[in-house]
Image (cartoon, rainbow, N blue to C red):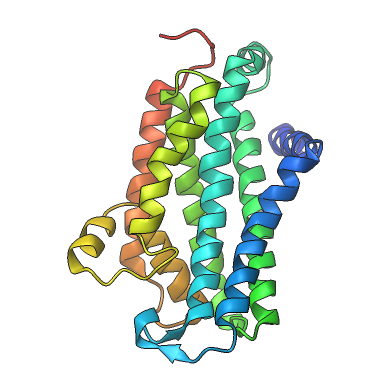
Length: 254
């Protein structure tokens, strides 16, 4: 294995070990979305297709949207909080002083977030299957993989961007949630939105397009949802631009 891939793999292993050494955090990362979809399964399992859920059963709808919000949790919320905490604790400053390339550090961190997201999504799909939601056929998995990777990358970029704007670790959870909480609800994650105005506005923001892209890939109802992926690409590029310009390694304010 050449130096670059070997370093990236080493960094991924480091992030994985750090993650699993905090079992309480790891436990709730995986258990919370599973508990949510299990509750929805108990409430809506076996229900018929409903126009309110765009011609899907309620649980089909929620399996996709809860899978999407689990990716947001791993790739946006946790990443922003972890980076803010590491910066305040001086860890980022020490990492910057080592020979480890910046690209390798972030590649390992982002790959770890994607891996956690994939495990979450598989668990959610599995619980949905226990309640009778059919798993996607083999023809849909490439589209699901593309949507998940692109969505995870976009929200990782946004997570790093938000971390670059947070002044201290204590403020990180509040800043992260005040951005995410209204977007999740306005984007139809927990309740379908049938307002044309709200949908029109939220369609230009990152969460609703991700919901729609994953819902389309999971159910096969809307094909590949290219326009939604385009919105995610734009937001990922914006997040990356802000992160590159504003990211700080030093805990001292600018």
